[in-house]
Length: 108
Image (cartoon, rainbow, N blue to C red; front, top):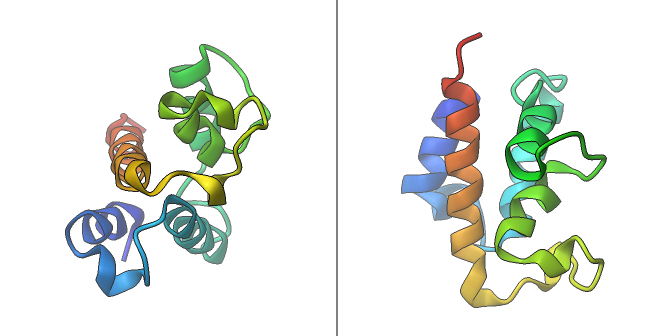
């Protein structure tokens, strides 16, 4: 399975792979997949995402960059990823999967 297929499964059958719908759970799962494959699936994603969201470089982990679009308090350090309100979790997961899909669609 590649990252594109994994994200499609998470979009359509999330509960087959994850025990809950939390953003932090999804981030951990995708990061684990990435690490298991020596960082190849998300190679360049951090750089691309920082440019897309922040307009330049950022040292923040991609999960915080994605969350910051809807939850700016994440960047301010007032909200951890495991404290995201339940009504925002699914939106952030959808945002993350959409952004990964955009990234994967870029020409190599």
